[in-house]
Every structure is written in C-alpha cells, then in structure tokens.
Amino acid sequence: GAGVSQSPSNKVTEKGKDVELRCDPISGHTALYWYRQSLGQGLEFLIYFQGNSAPDKSGLPSDRFSAERTGGSVSTLTIQRTQQEDSAVYLCASSSQGRDLSSPLHFGNGTRLTVT
Amino acid sequence: AQTVTQSQPEMSVQEAETVTLSCTYDTSESDYYLFWYKQPPSRQMILVIRQEAYKQQNATENRFSVNFQKAAKSFSLKISDSQLGDAAMYFCAYRSVSYAGNMLTFGGGTRLMVKP
Image 1 (tube, rainbow over the protein chains, first blue to last red):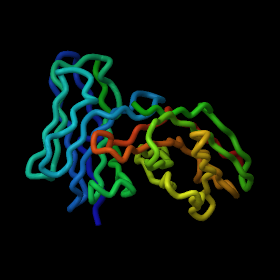
Image 2 (cartoon, rainbow over the protein chains, first blue to last red):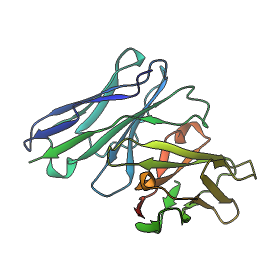
Image 3 (cartoon, rainbow over the protein chains, first blue to last red):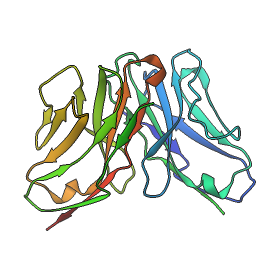
C-alpha cells in the first residue's frame, strides 16, 4: 500500500510569508507526528496527534507554528511569518495502534523548506 | 525529559567488515522502547531494528543486531558484513511508555560511510 505522502517535496519562500505543509498518513494509522530536521542535525519533535485526543503541541517552537488534522487523516503544518531559522526538512510520520508503543513510525520523504 | 546521545558524528567501515554505532540515553523509567532508524539521501527514515526494555535478549534483524545494556543505558547497533547500501545517517531513538511521551526522542545521528 501507499506510504506516508508529504507535499510539497521542496518549498522556497520569502521571509515573512506563511507556508503550509501537507501530510497524508498511511490509511488507518491513528497516530501522526511532525518532526523538524535542521541541516545535519537530529529530529526535533513538533506535534503529535492520536485519534480524537487533544494533540500534544509541546514541541512547537513558537506560536507561529500550528498544525491540524482533519477527519483523523490528512494533517497540515502551518508556519506563519516565516523566518530564516525555520529553514529545515519537515518530516511527517504515522503509526498504527497508537497505544502499541512497539509499533514503529513510518516516515514520509519530508518537505525541505528554505526561507530566503 | 529523556535525552539520547550519539557520540560519533561520523563512522567509516570497509565493505564486508563490521561496524558498531554507539547510543546512550538518559531516563528514569524502567520500561520503554528503543529504535534504530536509517536515513539514506532520499531523506526517508527507515526502521532498522527495535528493542523492548523489558526483554533482556538483544534484538537481531539479519545483519543488524543490538547490544542493549539497560543498567548502563546503552543501545549500540552492530552492522555485520557491511554493504555499500548501508551508507546513510543512523539515528537512535527512545520511546516512553507514558502517554505524555509517545513521541520518539532522537539522538543527533551518526553518518556511516562504507568504503568499497
């Protein structure tokens, strides 16, 4: 079946503009995660959705960042008034059976965001 | 909060030889999950191997095995008979069993180069 799909693959934007990044998780996966990966660095957790529960937003770096997940499927990460330090690869992941913590995360190919 | 440390930013191995990547973590929990992910240039994170903390037996997946030392909070990855396709970034990750910590916490990564 299809894996996690992210769009766009690459995005170049001007400082101060808003951007939206999209994630289509694997069908049936109840858990969805957003991570940020700066150049040559590890993955930084941003936000986590599990079913109908309130999302865990503890990793969002500022109030310019927000995310939603409509109908328990597609998710959109929005960055308002982008800054150069927002330049990074944004990775989305999903997993089945959110309470089964041995279940691995399945990642998309990410969106490379460049803020000029 | 848990932290994951990978002390080797880069490692190099000759094709067909064995290499070990180090990972240590800090936690006060007694039960948790540990993962190794591989990230090739395509950016997609691929699960290599997983370990449940309550299992004393080290996990193995074909040429990949771990040395899990719970008391030392160490989780190293051994790659045997290294192949050119093993060249990638490798990330160690920790997952708490508490709901608040369902996300994976990643180390900074180790870049593995495989020499022909």
